[in-house]
Length: 329
Image (cartoon, helix red, strand yellow):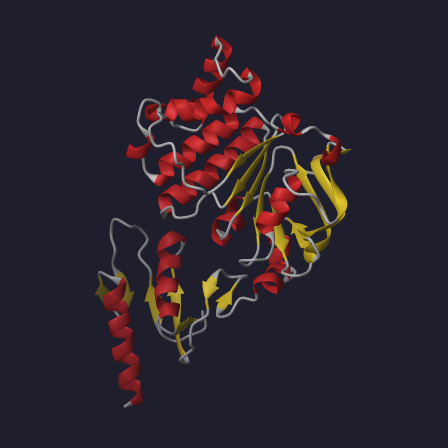
């Protein structure tokens, strides 16, 4: 996974005028990887994305594309390097999905915008890869935000750039669409060798699906590494300063009541049972006296506690409450 960086920067300082937002930045964006760029609101993520794209100059240092300073690359040539997907809502509602995706070919067609047979094939291919072929003939105003976002990614793919940069592509989407979008971007990186850089607040998805994380430290610099290293060495917690959330376990910290139970079982039923118990203040301790047998199959949901069977976790929690309350009487 130690691939050659397509974008690199050293000792980079970014901001506006005399206002320094981030400094001493050293970053690498690699081919075939999904990189998630994270940080608190106002930490400088959008500023760094704009600087990487050459839309605003750095205050100090330089950004290089394949070893060449982007400041020396003509703006029109950058359209063959980067494709950018922003969160701004589309204003051209009276376009079809296919027409939107086809605008990604403009750097290749020139000012006349006429599509060749090859261009049309590129459009079809982008629609197919992103799973949006069924949206090709639909008006944009009839589509959901998630469908529009997938078409924007298809447009970026159709532009045929080695780098795709996205600013909050999952903003305002429901859970299914958020997962679908991030999985799609991961697939574009891995299966189609794109360098995908995504600014996001989707911590849970980034930890599971990103190849690398960039972490913006407000007023400082940018940390870089694989998700697991950033969690285990404390750098992720250093940036976000989590309160009431155990990053290493992925659990919200709950108030302990001193009530302990023991579990037997495995798989997802065990995990959901443990989650329900801890959320209600019970601590799972395999040395505890009180034993709960977790069901072995989702087709037979029967928990066993004190030789009695319960058909839901809510019933189990009520039974535990009664048991511990009776011990305190």
